Image 1 (cartoon, chains in turn cyan, red):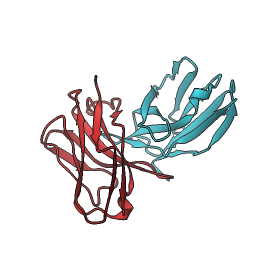
Image 2 (cartoon, helix red, strand yellow):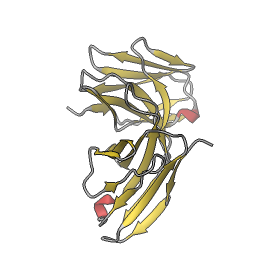
Image 3 (tube, rainbow over the protein chains, first blue to last red):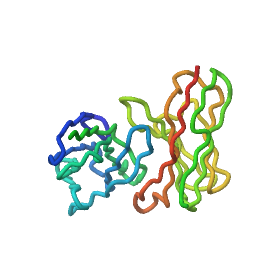
Length: 111
Length: 115
């Protein structure tokens, strides 16, 4: 099992739709979780952190399920500008805080 | 402006010709890292540095070298580039990854082609 796994997509949704991505991780000792956004051929940028209690920022909600070892990202009321690749980041755990990136999930929002 | 800079942004070279990609950050960050990104494989860590004079291998270090003589600079060296090192390279920095993982700030990327 890969350390961090994501469905590559693409998720193709109309404007205004709600879309959700999951990301599974293999190391139960992992303690830090994040979602990054990457636009085509640009550098990744932090979208939001994922806390045990969940995290909401406007239209974006991130949640952590430790029992099943996955994190999720929910985007409500999708905008054209949300089209991007969303990268899941998990630290290696076991005393290491070195981050491991998932391969990303591609989102395309169309008119 | 707080930023991570990389040079060059684009480079086409030939097999075996040594090259260096520079990376510099002006945020006084302790942690710096190099990644390569290839289609279908995502971001893979090449080397990282927890602080000056402290470097360690990431997941794909073969064929690369790094050094961290100053806090702000973390150059990536390809002593004898090969075509399989054709990729998009990102440098990143972070305040630290000691107690907890902090946000990483990425440079704009260097697109390298090795013929």
